[in-house]
Image: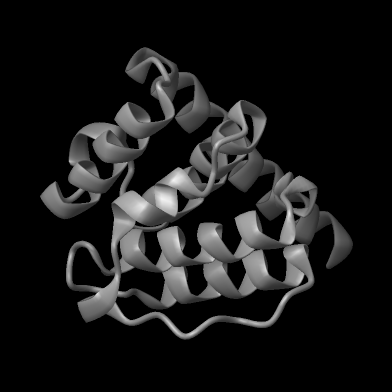
Length: 136
């Protein structure tokens, strides 16, 4: 929804973060694959090659220095969380570590995550409702 506002470099960094997050529990689900495909469509960029073995999350997070961009990246990452989990409390340990690192690196108050999560769930619900309305 907001990814088109990122710079080209930030878009690529976001995709790297998204892949890293999705693989952090050693299970890149079909739902997460579809979400990342949607990210590419929204940003109007080609998918990237992600190399788990040579990826440095710290360096990539540093490339997103604009506070607004950081919030967009965190907010959009929430879709990956809720692709496989029903709440922030139920996310995999690896995903939680990546999420905590993002919050720390971006200097964002972790209490705002619940608000980001609730917004994301509402967007998912409204999108599903829209699909039903279109197909009536």
